[in-house]
Amino acid sequence: MKRGFITKGICGFTILAILASSFGVSQVFAEDSSTMATSTESTQTSAAPQINSTETTETEVPTQESQQTPSIQTSEETEVQPEQPQTAIVDGVEVALEAPEKAGKNEADITQAPKEELIEGSPRLFRAAVQTIPMYRLFNPHSGEHFYTRDTGERDNLRRIGWNYEGVGWQAPTSGDPVYRLYNRYNGEHFYTLNAKERDSITKQGWKYEGIGWYSYKGANAIPVSRLYSKRVNWHHYTLDENEKKVITKQGWVYEGVGWYAIGSGQQNQEDYKLLGVKNYNQYALGAPSGCEGASLLQALQYKGKITNWSLTQFLNTIPKSPNGNPNSGFVGSPFVENSWTYSAIYPAPLTTWGKKYGNVQNISGSSMNTLLNEVKNGHPVVAWVTINFQPIRWGNWNFGVAANNNHAVTLDGYNKGSNQVHVSDPISGSYWMNRTTFENIYNARKYAVVVR
Image 1 (tube, helix red, strand yellow):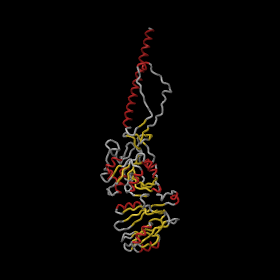
Image 2: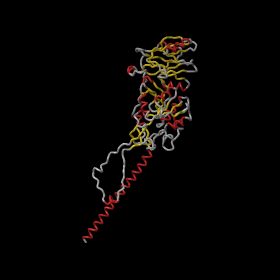
Image 3: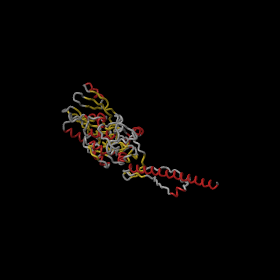
Image 4: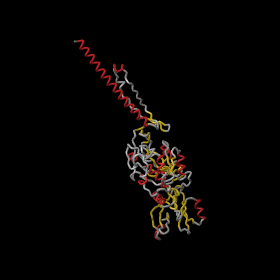
């Protein structure tokens, strides 16, 4: 009986050992299967750029010997190591990857665009001493009148109805002696004067007083703006360009003296300064929270005189859609919807194909910053892929590859080399000047760009 009991005990222990060993083997195979699935998925999502993981998993299938003698692990061996972040190689640079989470309005609300006032010349201390605003100059090719305004909305509206935009005429202070603006409804002329008595006198003659147009500078080194009059056309002209003054004086214009004083000259040298002044669409206000690329393209097309009567919604309804969730083959999702799990965007190649239906649109991705500015110099606005409010780029590992989680697009439409500034029309934060280096650093992360010629 004792021998039988011992045999039974040994048999029971053997059965338990086999069961335990079998359970360990099945668990290992389950883990190995999971690891293989994960490895396959990682290979598919990292086609380009290359994804590196510091984690390595090596699975050994136990031999019969190890099954018979299950190994006992110490607490040191079972300690869970912290998961290491994934990385990817983007243009030869190793970058950290985040979870794929598309940024949107929340990021736009909690960050600020790096807006700057236009700085005249190169000294940055000058702006701190006196705040200035650019005065825009436009020309009516039908009547021959020149018009001046500080209002970008008024400037853009006149351009839409046929006026030629000639750039910044001068820099005006934000305070000082008021320059009054009047309008003659009979011949269409605008008249500007510092003299309140003159303002009141011609108001009595039927001119309409429209308020204070801007201010005259009273400080040191003020630049005089000359006022001239032509009896032949019966209106006035104003300029701080001495050469222009001499030319039109020879044509019969009479110099009447200084109209007012500017704080800084206009920038007419296109090597140093250029501002196209493209229209601005606000993607959120117009119900297109994911429509930045389309808005930026429409801004550029309409500057070139294409589909000027189209609304942003009308234009976005024609956007080509991606068939596979990849922005390289079309727009992913809908430009009228925003969420964190859809990479709502369109990349340069399909955007170019779309744009060619309406104008001369070319993909110039890979171009240097100087190439972009040369396009602007030649009157060609550029759609550039950047980030929301120019925040540091954050990379995410999406199913189609590595992409910027905080992707955004703007229209580049100006530069001022003397102050190292560029001008953008941003579908989130409006039109503004900003530091060129800030723009360039964000742009260079991908160098995605499309030009409208």
